[in-house]
Image 1 (cartoon, helix red, strand yellow):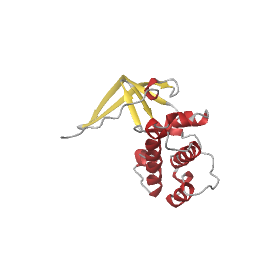
Image 2: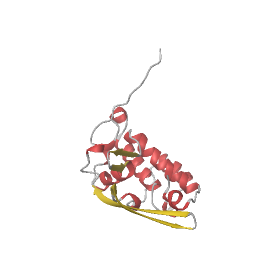
Image 3: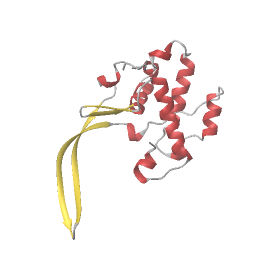
Image 4: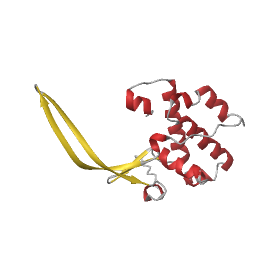
Length: 168
């Protein structure tokens, strides 16, 4: 979900570009965009960015498609996916530009670090407060946040099996 929609409820064609970028990265990596195990929460964009900036983006390619893809094309698709998930809508390309980027060898801008994804935290209940005025209740929750380094987390290191059920 595009940050501007999640935070402010604003939706535009650039929100669709964001969603396309997430989908493109999911297809390349063969993983869901958001993963949680216990109290840890990581997302695919965060992990792909961490590998991209360390020159290791090809490590995220789904083993099922790995042998049928050219590394240069996969890196280009990851690059385009990261451009599509820029934090600000005005920094994202249009879908027309995305189609052009995918179908040509044109030079691509460098993606910016997706700021909403720079640090993923796990949340543990810490405290809350309760107020009531004229039958209107307001509850404020506080949480203790813990940084999780996507390169150190085991959540993305393992291959997740794909289950196919056949109905006979």
